[in-house]
Image (cartoon, rainbow, N blue to C red; front, side):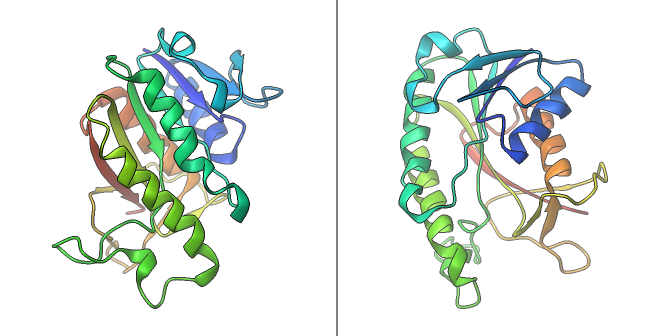
Length: 209
C-alpha cells in the first residue's frame, strides 16, 4: 500500500508518517519545505499546487493540513478543494484530519458542539472553518473521502496507549466521561482506517478508551 501524507511536517502529520512506517507501509511525505519527518521518500510541493499527476500512484492520501491563524482559516476549505479535485473520480482514498467542533450533540444532528454555550470562544473560528470544510466535503460524491474527527481534548504530547474508541457523527465520551485522545493514538487509528477503508464518504470520530 502506498500512502501520501500531505502537510506531513506538522505534529499530527509526523506521527501519522511514523505510525505508517512502523507498520511497513510505503510512505511519502508531501511537504512545502524541508522534509522533517522520518519518511525517506518526500515530495516538495505547496498543497495549493498539488495536481492529479502528483497523487496518481497512491492508494491513500492523508490530509494533515491545519492552520489556526484567523486570516488563514479559509485555507482549510481551499486546500481540501485542491486535493478533492486532484483525486476526483479516482480509486485513491482521501482521509482528512478533521476537528471535534463539528460533532453533533443530538441524534437529529441539529446542534453542533462548537455552537454550544460552553464551547471555548477562542476555538470557535477554527471549529467553524473545519465544520465548513466538512459540509463542502459531503457534497463531493466524486471522491472516496473519510473525515476523521479527534476527541474534544486533542493532546499533542500525551502517550500512546494503543487503544481507542471508534465513534461516529455524535459527540461521545468514554466510561470516565472524557472526550480525549492523544495525537499518537489518533495517528494509529488513522492508519487503521487507511489500511481497512471501512468508512468511505463518512465522518468518524476517535477518543481514548
